[in-house]
Length: 219
Image (tube, rainbow, N blue to C red; front, side, top):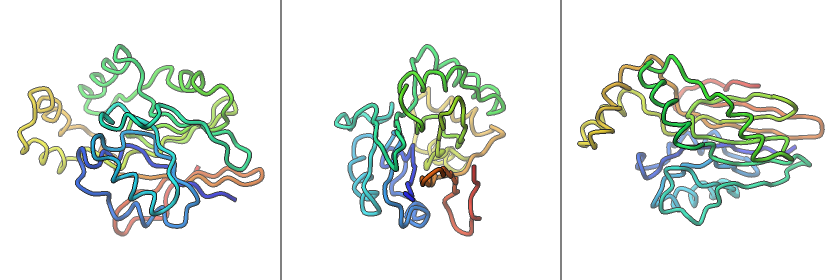
């Protein structure tokens, strides 16, 4: 059985100065790491290097990865006979911006991605598993014989982080977004995933990263 670490949206060093220690605890012993993009922009090579100390890394370019143009926008690989596609998951701004505005103004109550799985499947018509990031929301959904896996995000904008970014004197746009977002009702935790593949077996576990956390949620 192959044990694969799945990670996305580390945003290090863009927003995080260092990778949380919980990543190394949760991913210890994996055979491979798949990174779903938004590694960390310029300087993200060090993030990939540190992850590679755990296991070989297959990563893709996200919409915040300016400076990491050497990363491909998508990858396909085969593990234990399963074809896996990796992509960040961001679509056209004409689709993304209205959905972001809706989520922000609803204080996180409305987070929808209409047609997203259909779009992902169109990017990888021959894959049984599609790994993506971008939404910062962990999910594992099987639809039409395809497993769509988002491990969630390492970097989450919870209230303490919002206040930290406000203190840094952000741009007007970021300041406005943070002022609204600090009151949102959902407060997702930082997470990573473990994907286990064996003969006739597919198991996904999403783990929060931090001290004293439980065994994780399985799908």
